[in-house]
Image (cartoon, rainbow, N blue to C red; front, side, top):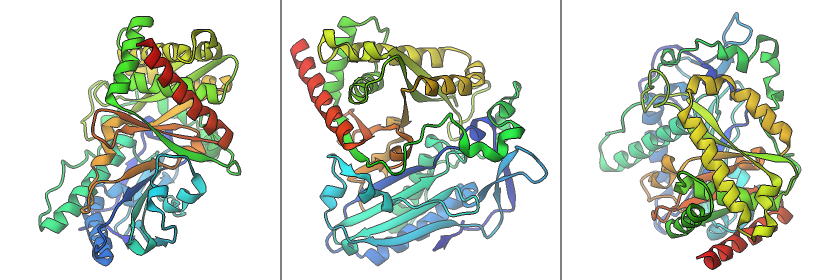
Length: 439
């Protein structure tokens, strides 16, 4: 079915900025939220509330109902074009797999089981698609699949939309319509004095951006397992304590500890010689000049590049945790460089640095953020039991989120072939054992 914005706005053309156009060739971001339903839940009412509340949320984020296109008469200028009557595809489906606990587990699962729960983007330039899947007729739960084209907005903006939808859904049951602060839809706030748009999307290559090699893609025919690994607040503190005692790191935050831990394990699971890179997103809204509003709708992300050699991340002579220290030090240094330098200058070399990292042959990217609060998305029937970023199966990224336990921990979603997953799990356990011994 198609869901149109409540009280449709006028025809609008929203030009892409250089932050946005960088993501035109990227695969869409796909999340699946698993919700448990009460045994006596009225699934017809649940679906009706989701549909009705979606029209409220899409009204505030109406560009998501539009489509991505080349601006007529231009060679490389893209825009989000909304025309009254445009709508978001909202699919209702049923899935016969009745093992909710297995589908929503942390243990490795075949991506092929979960992929059908995330909808594809419709043809014609759509930038958002949604799917509500009843698991075993709704007797066990509901999976909410969300697919967003990254050129439309970044994770901060897309999860702002989801929180708005969740608030509208909860308000529907309460008979009110109080929503979070609306997005700021104004691309003129992002100036481009350096001409970065043409750097990220040269006119000669605008028609072939899908082949952009700045984005890593995993072969579609490769079997992939998706698993979630959780580092509790106490476990992260152990990492920080060891790093503070053994490595020259100015500040080891929980995010640094989690990413360093996962990066070192990932490298051991897929070892490579030479230099390797971890690329993680940095929100530039508050760092731009002048700063952008916190609720700015669009992309406003730079990148932090953590660089280390394969031998440093392996560091076999230092025991199972030797690579952990090097990884945390590199992540901390990459973040420090990204947040302390000039944001405009950093964006000016982003694509070049990303291409160099890809050429190394060992780049790992990070999707998501604990700040997105994905486990707070109550759609009127409780918070999600599990959230997966399914698109990491195509991009090879690792996904991070806050721990669903609400204890200050961090969850990391990892997608690997079976043999790589076995190696990763072993390394994960070995590093924890090393931490226990180190203390």
